[in-house]
Image (cartoon, rainbow, N blue to C red; front, side, top):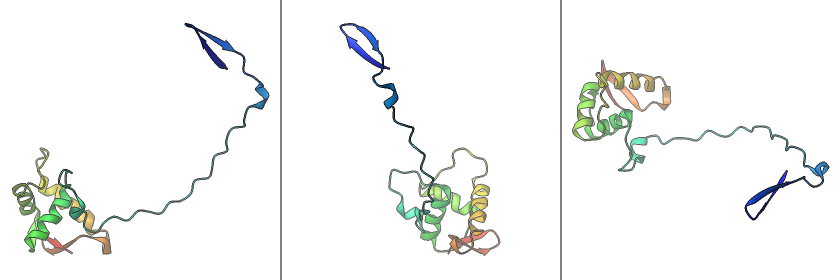
Length: 123
């Protein structure tokens, strides 16, 4: 119904030509969209004010070190370089280890390479 506002009061007027209502719009079928590709090294695309994730910080540390490192060494280096600090977790090195193992399961898209038992390098 249409409303008409006049000097402090509101009056409701009947809708004109109720039979002239438009039919409801039909829903368009969903279309598939292409997946967006992500950068191979997301650590390099971060700006100075964005927080870096633990795995991105590990990549940055490995890139700078250019040698195989354990997860504990990577976490210590991340804290020293102020790339990433633990939000209060008790075992950030175990969390990083699990994240790297998940990344290794990607096959050819992995960003890490296992150098020795418990030691990783960049691919």
